[in-house]
Image (cartoon, rainbow, N blue to C red; front, side, top):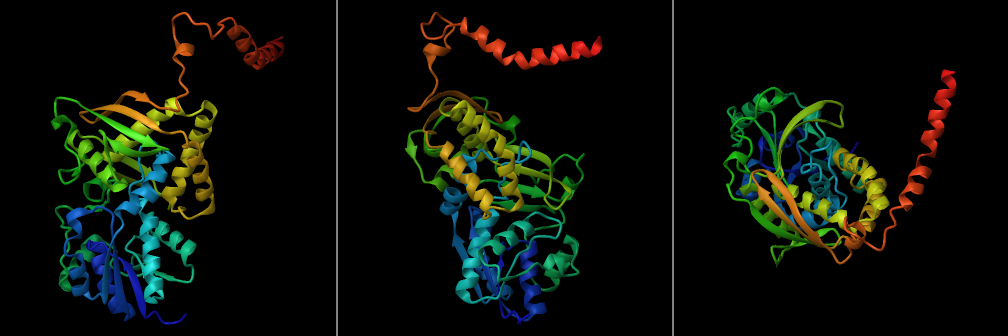
Length: 403
């Protein structure tokens, strides 16, 4: 294999990638370019360019991807109503393909032979980054230090950074591995590695404790166009602006907290604490609007595919043909998903109150408990008999066996 002369590293400035930058420079004796994706981390990005350059990077890119992230990754996923294992809204998972795509773009533009990431050999992110790279630029080599070096614990990483004069935000008092973007904030590690331990005070940053949330509920309206939220309380917002505004609302009312033990793609169970305030509001409102806009059989078919779609996102197959094909079906189902939902936010809960749509399939004249001229209730008898034929046949067969 030809010598690697230039590497583009996915760089967050946290413990792992801070150590990795210096480690690659020492062990591969090559040029390292860093790429930091601005996905809404806020103050976490302050000074990252200077930090990367001072740690040995030849160039440091900080790329604003907030609008692209929400419009082209988060919203398509939410149009599919993707939820992993009943609760996780895939906040980390959905960010990885975009980061990988930008990493590849810079690597190709800069003439690099490799890309690098800070995902561990135990986690899902290594799979997500590398499957995306293989789909986009299979000739690029991937350097994954966690699978190569002997710094096999966070304590050793902290010591390595101290020895090399690298400041890192992680301390032994708050030893969490965190991932933050506009969709969510996650916590892993520390006391969370014991599933019987309650999350410590260093977790949950985006939202107040529901017990401390306002005693008065707040009502909002959310308008959708073809499955995408576009207007909040009468104000049209950009995709990133919409998610940021929903985060503020949800965080104020303690919405979107999740403590879950999930099944990683690599085969182990893992516990994570997730905050997804805006995404929780969005998912609940979107699902409610579908109740009046989507045909029954289409809704049931789509729902049967949600677990498969969510697995594709979770496992790193965003750029796979099966995800792209399934996305086409999901988006076709959203063509009439235009309307407005009114919701109440209160102490950790999201409660739909009302919904309307120009594409509504709800017919009050048909559904009423009052007298109507449309539905002949006597027709239900034949409907029930026909649908019960197989049950009658099964019962008759069972009775014959008893004789």
